[in-house]
Image (tube, rainbow, N blue to C red; front, side, top):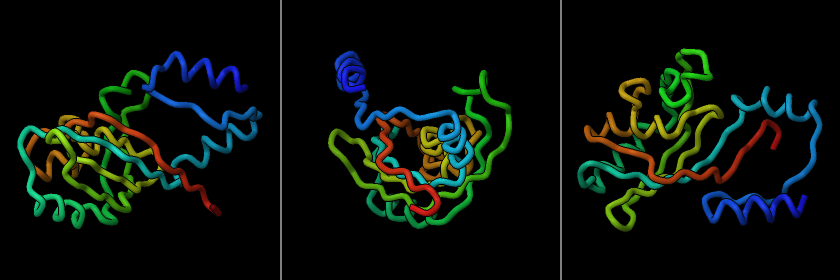
Length: 154
């Protein structure tokens, strides 16, 4: 497995990084899939905006998204492989700050199965509310990383 990790990390050239790879069985994989929507996940993202955003706007967004339920219609980017449904997801917390080069740095704590890129962009109205909708300007996820996954009992 270490050779596989080295190979993936070498080929990915920093785009992704794999570590702690372990073998598993079908039962464990099925349990992971079943638990995915009840898990809580944390992400970090860099966001581009079509206009500069004020600190007051960022603070207001943090308040507006704390504990809110959003509606996410199946995103365009996955519509060829997912049923066209509206999924209700809980946004536990978002923190936002200005970053270098006009980007925003965001941290998200959300219900598993939340489409973060669409929470940011709105996906042409398919996710409501969205960061883009609330700011009244275009927003795009420039970088996204999963930083933690919490399952029941952890």
